[in-house]
Length: 391
Image 1 (cartoon, rainbow, N blue to C red):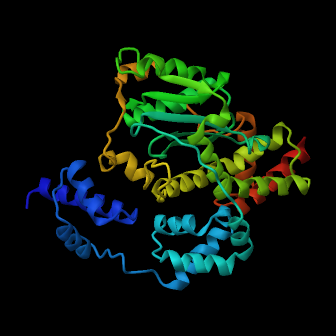
Image 2: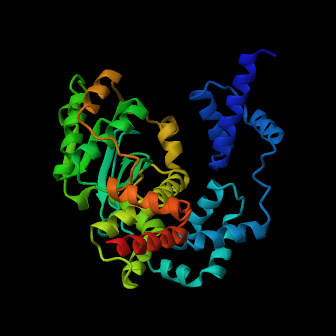
Image 3: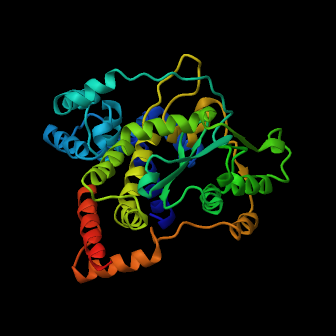
């Protein structure tokens, strides 16, 4: 068997496994394999391949493993999740469970949370986008800003896929926001037809970059490729913030307020930088995890016929919704030119002097970076006490 044929089989198996674990139905997997990757299969052939890979939708994880996973999720931001999102988290983590089982387990383990979610309601307004990358909605999120953590995100208007979600020590520096935008453009090898943002100086570089990258385009949107307006009318990103608050950031708000109420956070320069040092990587991991769950959960149909489905699938296979990718291809040279004026987020999460002091204390006391919220809180309190004793 030729090496190239083996490599193609490996790629095919990897793609099939990826979309199988996203919960995509067999017919759509066959369509994606054919139209995106060039692998022509029948549904019957796909099922044979899945059997050889030992993948089955009817094979579920032991119930004790499902309960253990949900209990672990409820100890952190998962306590904010409804049963549909918890089911998506199970799928994302490789824990196979029935949605009804997840619902019943949650009702037993978290009856207070289930009762509180029942009374929530969300009114949706009409919205339309031609296809993936027609509109990117960008915005900053300030709920964790009092504690030194500034979140910024972008979502695709048609598919609702999260283009980026970042936490850093600022979401007001236009060069940093411009850096997020250019990194996404470079990753996707193109820019959207329209960028929708709020009024504010933090978006001026994104405006300039978008207009520069679209300067030679002649489509109807080229003349108005950047739109700004009020935050409340930026529908897609506001829906994402609502989801993020319920499924993730409320946990972190309560965590940091707990430190504040215990007298371990006063909101000054040092405290914010210590929060950034101890928590930023963990919060970023949590944001990435929630974004992955969002991208792979199923958006239910609405009364006004807005496209619905899995955001990742809607983004990567728009032909299933009788539309096409609206991405505007840009050259590497143009992106490189814009990057000369942008700032890429540093790997150092806080002030360099505070970072140096913290790493020295950790080295002296043989401490390791935190891997969860409790470890981060313990590390924060320890570093704070050690540094304040010296000051």
